[in-house]
Image 1: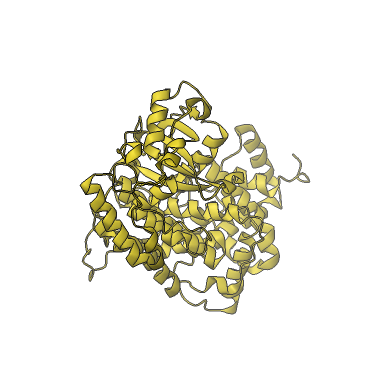
Image 2 (image 1 turned 135 degrees about the vertical axis):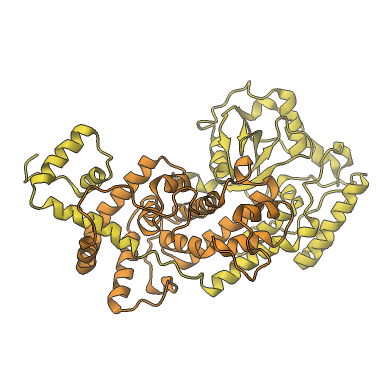
Length: 292
Length: 226
């Protein structure tokens, strides 16, 4: 490397961060040591770093943003009285509400999630509100829970209230039709990956694509368990993955969103999908899958 | 961690607030958010360069954090070991929201306006300072968002590389590499716009090989840039 053959700024920056292999780093060191220009470039690089350090701009959140955040976080709090775990869905298929409970509705059975959805969906053009509240399975406690949710919804969502009354005993056949799982149609995988809240979106997109580490493996889940998950979710999953969530063994299930072909729900369930137990659910837009 | 003395949560740590939130205390999470939102906002605003997008990202992240900890307890499946972990986790969620948002809107050019930064430690005390701030924002806007996020955390906010790696969920080497490439891209952008600024800043910097920036708190120290 001659003094006419300067390393690029990027290379200098990498050298400065100790990122170059030893032989390349030695070459850059030798050059910089004798070059009249490169120390100046190096100073520029370090100067940029120092300049940024003076521009952190940590002040107070602007009032309007602060108010917005308070409101967003207050909405779930208002519903704390109904902050019950997701209600068991252990009823027999014929004892349902009459309308097929789809995952989009299941979302609303979790008051926290529903409240969050109410916050997040504003202006988004997708109405997740005003869906049927399920219940009335002949289980008194379930009825009570559903009633609580209905009343709350009427308060919160006004006009949507009329749709919230349990609609017992009609068209159950339609609900039954999609509930027999065809295990061979489900993308099964055993990624073993430990998931967290932040990577469920990525997981959901990869699972429906069969992309690594969710390589399809027909032996990952037996047919009986696929059926169990179909029953728990009340819809056949598009994909199931045997893995973990927050360090605990869990299954991930991806279910289509009836109301939006470009979106799916990613459910986190205990292994084997025991009825009524759901650890987490995330709605994932498939449009974002082109992001790196 | 600041703990308001007039608040019912005076003396209550961040990790304890999360535990109370998970146990059903309806105000605990709001308190946690209030403690951290200034810093989270600053990171989001610098990373996205857009006021509305930054507000969206912070709100999205906090609501997500709210429900995640309500439904599954503390993230990681165990109680936080200390306040620093809560700070890192909140930053992780916010920065991820920023990256998601930026990638979704990447088809649209970013052109931050002065009004986008209608906050700050104090009103800039000179026109030169205002110009420099604007120049920095506009230069940052030309970087890929991954480089921008790394520079905002490490160079602007003084997070140690290892901690920034946890926030960004990438190896430390990747953080260093993003910072290095980002700085290399910024030099010509800032040199042409603010010759004085870079020179002045460079004058304060040692010529000895760079070591890890002495950043905030490191591990147990509270984890917040001060």
